Amino acid sequence: MKPFCQKSTYIDARNLCLKEVHQVFKLERQPHGSFTELLSLEPLTNQEQQEIDKIRQNFDSYYAEAKISEGQIKFLFLSPLLWLSGFYQPSIKITLEENIADILVEDEDTLIKGRMDILAVSNTVRKISPPFWILVVEAKNSSVEALEGLPQLLTYAYKSLDNQKSVWGLTTNGLRYQFIHLQQGNQPTYQLLPELNLLDAE
Picture 1 (cartoon, rainbow, N blue to C red):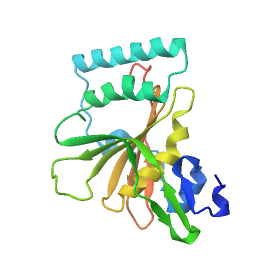
Picture 2 (tube, rainbow, N blue to C red):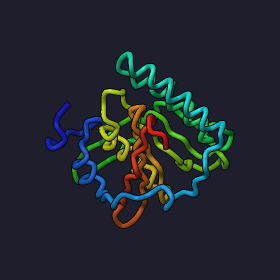
Picture 3 (cartoon, helix red, strand yellow):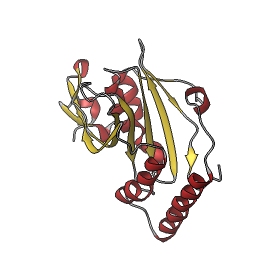
């Protein structure tokens, strides 16, 4: 794989660094935001808290033994958390290992390709094309910092701004959960939300 600066005709999104993503997509990071500015959050029910406690204990058990693979993180921790969050319902379609449409960067004569780990899209109006993206997820194994997935995540999520005003993204290593919120504009922007840690009591 040629380095980005050599104007390769094809780049895997996994090989982009954050500086390159900012330059290529003219993305600007806004000051850190808060969840309450963007979402109306309800307190967890006792049952939801008990389920999160089980997921936390399960993570603790696996993490104590060895590095947790990316596949295990998606199956053992992300999947039940998405269920708890209400993503498994007829109005939302979940796809795995979804290819992104090729992104052509004309001034660099470059084509960016990639594959996102998990994509949640609105399924309420089946005839909408392209569909409305709700959440893009990039997962890493437990030995990699969650933020390592940020350049990849921004690349994938940026593509949705062709057809909608904003989109949520999440990059995680199973322990740490870094949400982002991207918005359209003359210069597209994104915010990093406070990082969530599965082992924290909150």
